[in-house]
Length: 216
Image 1 (cartoon, rainbow, N blue to C red):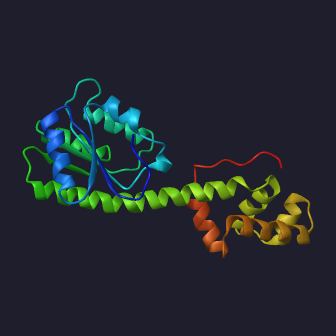
Image 2: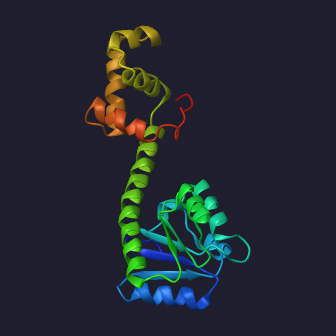
Image 3: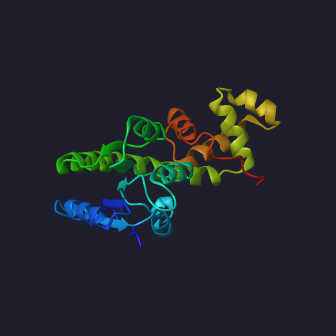
């Protein structure tokens, strides 16, 4: 089972036992923890929820029994998998590399490879994953704050972000200007925003990932 902590973790999926153990030993030699899986199904069974993922990388073979590496890559991408994926294969060709990279692979490495090349690629992927996971955690936090807004707060926020002055918002919602000011202040407090510019950045960062709440 994949544990949740902040130490980097390299996931290795390869049906060649000697290869996956060799890569795990290579990563452990520089202090990186690695977990190995013989198939896509084994990995999918072990994966935690996205918010529990550790920084790291997924090193993925292409040709495997059952779901292939490229199929697993597409599946993980569709579900919003946050860790960078490195395709490592002994059966690579240009069209396969193009397909993998277009689908979002972080890197494509052909076997046999130089150990330092793989280590450098994984190190870069780990740095990227830390940034990616931080962004993901921030988006979840912002969505949580948005979920605390009531309908009136939501209506006021939408109009404030559209640049409408309080008197126009008051007219549109048939409320007093004083009431609009109260809702506006409440939005800023619940969203933990220090300015309208910061509020706008928060909302734009999760655009398409949230829905207006029901009536409060």
